[in-house]
Amino acid sequence: MELDSGITAWMLVSASLVLLMTPGLALFYGGMTRSKSVLNMMMMSFGAMGVIGVIYVLWGWSMSYGSQSIGGFFANPFEMFGLDGAILDESGEFVLDGGLPVIVDVGFQVTFAIITTALISGALAERVKFGTWMVFTGLWVTLAYFPMAHMVWGGGLLSGDGPFASIAEPIDFAGGTVVHINAGVAALVLAIVVGKRRGFGRTPSRPHNLPFVMLGAALLWFGWFGFNAGSAYAADGLAGLAWVNTTTCAAAAIIGWLVVEKLRDGHATSLGAASGIVAGLVAITPAAGALSPVGAIVLGLLAGGLCALAVSLKYRFGYDDSLDVVGVHLVGGLVGTVMIGFLATDGGLFYGGGLNLLAVQVIIAVVAMVLSAVVTLVIALALKATLGWRVAEDVETIGIDSAVHGESAYEGLGSGLAATLPPREGAPTTVSSEEKVGS
Image: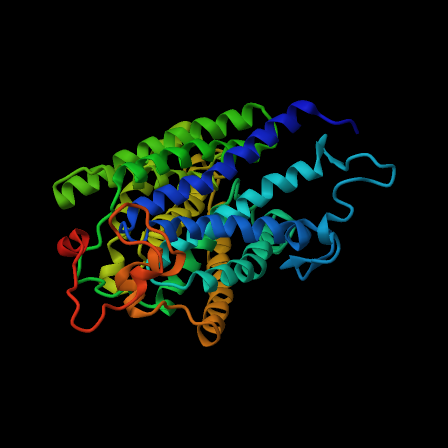
């Protein structure tokens, strides 16, 4: 088999687009936090890039896509440890799969692992130790993400080679279960285990920079074309369908979110528009190659509206999902995964396909939620008992940027170690304008 330079070029560009999503997420999340914690929030995304970019090469690819499957849950991490056998064959030529060098696919897939883990950080804003987060990143991607990728895309339990395929072929085009349900459930579990921010539900915590949020959403949308269209693994009609469906669904989700927001709150906000974009992108991710563009409109309107309603559930149930990972990614991922059973042009209920595909989509969603919840809970409790999750109360009050990173994003917010020290006895204290307004 000869190298296909067209496919190779397409996949290199797609991988680069997906990698851009993580800095985009850093802007999106950073703008949603308070100004004294923005750098820490962005560092959680960049930290995930650092940890996962290394361990994916060591054992991540092997665990996800190795041929030695262990019970359909994960592949042998030592089969291709350090990408042994995944780069060059015995004759010294690059190993190809369908005309694509396997090493290019490694580059594509590592970006998925990075962004999935970084998504979880939004549930932990402004209150966790950076070191604990870094350790969690390595453990979670190894014990939750790599196995889920193997189960869905690597021929495992939830794939077309698994037991549920006897009912219908499971569909997860680009990561409804692997990425969004997986990360959304992990975010919910961590929000419960770690606990609430000080003042949650009593003191307003407003986004400090909405232009950051909108710029981050724009970069996520741009990068998502690599995420979805790149998952076609060719610059062909399927990639074009995924591209159009991605744009259409995100656009419709803006409308769905803003309508709910206007009716409920009386305002259509920039934060709502940015969140609607992400909700639509999340929902179309598993379905990008299975729906028609008209179906993508229906899915986008539904996902935007439901996610807009879902983000308020944290106040009703009392879990502090700081930046709405659960409301957007878990709910959006579930909507997209399940609605495939209704809207898929091949096998969907609305297209005369019966209940089989719908049943399979529900099954794989439930299995993904259970597995992610169990693994995340074990990791979260182990880290709570050893390293601890929470920063000290005074650090949370001062802001993690100064106390942990020795930096501040904006002049006048305090910098360096001095900002972390308590005032001398009898010395006057100051209150920042940010704290006065409770933002």
